[in-house]
Amino acid sequence: MHHLNRPLRTATAVLATAALGAGAFAAAPASAEPSPALRAARAAASTDSTPSTIAATWIAGELSNGLLTTGGQPDFGLTIDAGMALSTVADQGGTVTAINNSLEPRIADYVGDGTKESYAGALAKAATFARVAKQNPTSYNGVNLITRLEERTADVPADPATEPQKAAIAGRIFDKSEFGNYANVIGQSYAVRALTLAQSTEAGAARDFLLKQQCASGYFRGSFDKADAPSQSCTEGVAGSEADVDATALVVTNLVESGDKSPAVVGALAKAGTWLASKQRGSGAFRASAPVSQINTNTTAVAGYALGLLKNRDAAMKAALWIRKNQPVDKYKCRTALTKDTGAVAYRKDRVKASTTTGIPATARDEWRRATTQAVLGLQFAPASKDQLRIVSVRKQARSGENVQFQVFGLAPSESACMQVKGDFVRVKGKKTGDKIVRKLQLPAGNQRRVGLVKTSDDEARTSLRVFN
Image (tube, rainbow, N blue to C red; front, side, top):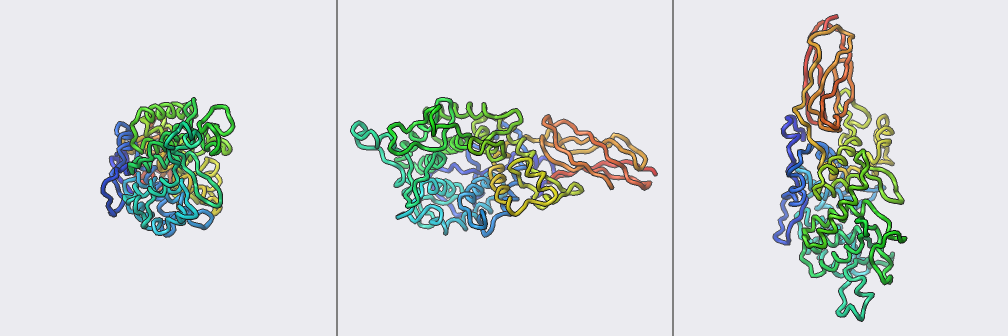
């Protein structure tokens, strides 16, 4: 969808991340009402819907029969991430429905058969997606995802005093699998969101166990202690309690979207938000925790989105600006081998350089899909332009072959554009300040009026001047 007039580009998009209550469910296309949390977070921010829209369009084009693949095989977890991200973009309701229609019949492949194999984190994530897609998580392809998740959530013992170990793990999620137990803190946060929105009697215990995974500094760790450890709480400085930026960001998002406004949750969110903001670099980017330990768009996007939901708009916008720099838009005269993948977001800047002449290599496509899926969320807080897009020639007339200055107004911060005149072009990016950009273009031969153009992914403006040989 191309928005050729500036008001549409800068208007806050009609958004849709579901934080629906446990009320009626419709099978209509999943272009839901925006989640109250995201709507509130964006209400006072002037944002540009373009970068998240073009990223979402690219992801939608990467689906194969409604699913994303990794190594040629359906990747249900990544597909759900994509569906939840696309639900925040105005014109992607149909894609969310298509994802749901492909995922629902195969849900057992993701969550297990419910007898020998039952995966807690997958059940929680699937239940969360079902709600976002306007489906009923208590009857999803005939499976009650909530009941299954409750079965995988440790019960509160009748007498905590006589059963201290059972009390210590109350509310913790566990996989049932012959392959081992891989349940972790991120899965726990999805479980809290799913159980809370379903008004499950186990939601409180699951939430309390999740809050024990927050360390004194405010971060959440990524993994649980062994099930027989007497303490199940995050302990700073102890092996297994290392800080995890991605886990902290996803816990924040899931707690906000759970709608739990209890004092314990409000306090935990405030501490987590302060810690996350302290990890943001001057560039706006975030570095993933060990073992990845790299600055990248995935971590920056989930952290920026979480901070946006917490109404830290400055931090969210800074993160979005950095992500947008990694979204090459090489179109028109500035086209490259990446033009056919306009909207895709690179994991790191070096991936853009590597793919400009070759295109995205087949072996790297999975990485671009993962980066772009999360980027859709982080880009929700990209700042809008100050002005209508326009281009002005500094001179009314000039000789062919001369280098003439053109001024461009109305580029959003970090927005890519192509400035061009017949025979010459230059790539430009919007300044952080949103101020005008001045570049020179060489004028072609021929006694006639020539047009100078500036083109973005979804908009263009033009000016003209007389050229003499």
